[in-house]
Image 1 (tube, rainbow, N blue to C red):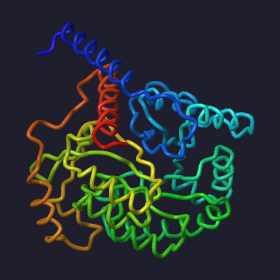
Image 2: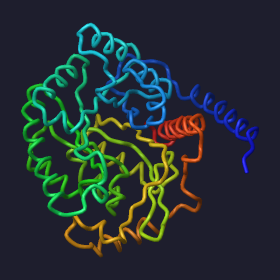
Image 3: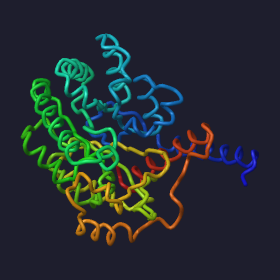
Image 4: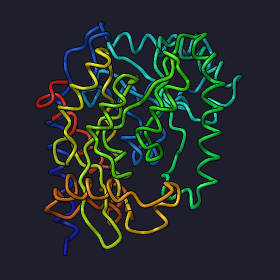
Length: 352
C-alpha cells in the first residue's frame, strides 16, 4: 500500500528528474525551421489540456519547453482569425525556429466555407500541412454492422473529394490518419482514387496494430503518400478476448521505430515526426469476439495467425501502465514524464 508520504516522495522524484531531462532537451534556438523534424502532437497532452486549456501561444511554449522543433496543434487552439493575432503567432514560431501543423476535423473538411477559412488561416501562419482523422473512434467499437461502415466509407470519400479543390487552391497538404479505422490497403485505395498531390496520409506508427496489421508493412505502403506522422511506440498484452494495447514511451514497445523512420524519409525527405504519446489506460482489442469482425466481412485467419506469431509473441513482461488510480497531479506528472522520456529517446537514440 502506498502511503501519502511515499506518494509525495515519488511525485517529487518525478518532478526533479523531469526538470533535469527538460533542461537537457531544450536546444539552442534556431531561426531555420526547415531542417527541424521533431514535433509534438496536441494529443500527447490530453490530461494537461483537460486540466488547463491551452491557447496557441501556451501550446507552442509547452512544446518548446519539452525540446520540440515544432508542434501539431488543433486549430481550435487559435483564439482569433484576426490578421494581427495570426501575425503574432507566426512571429512567435519564427522567433523560436519552430514549424507548425494544424489538425482539422472531418466535419470541417466537409464544410467548404469552414475549410476555406481554415486554409486562409493556415496560409497566414505559414502552415503547409494539415492533419485529420475521418473517424474519431475505433472501427471495431463504433460500427456493429457492415452497412454502417460502408456508409462511413462513402461519406469519407465524398468529404475528401469536396475538400480537394480547396486544398489545391491554397496549396495545402492534407494527411489523413490511419486512425484504427482503415486497413492500410483501403486507405491506399482511397488516396489513389483521390489522385491528388495535396491529399496524403498522416502515418500513425502504431494504430493499425489494433487492426492486426504490422506497423512496418503499414509504413511501407503509406510512404509514397506520407504528409506527416504520429510517432509512437506500443506495448501489447494478451487477455481472454484478444489483447490490450497501450502507448508507452518510445523504445519500450514493439514498434520498429528506426525502420519506419527510414522508410518514411525515403518517401518524403522533409517529413515531420510528431510525437503522440497518449498517457491513458490500455485499450482492449477483442479480436476473438465475432463483433470485432462485423465490418470486415469475415474473420481473417491469415491476418490473425501472422499477427499472433509476429506481435503477440512479444507481449510485455510487466503489466501495461494504468493511470486511472492516480489523482490529477499524479496523472499529469506521469503524462509529462512519458513525453520527456520519449523526446529524450527520439533525440538520443533515433537521431531526430
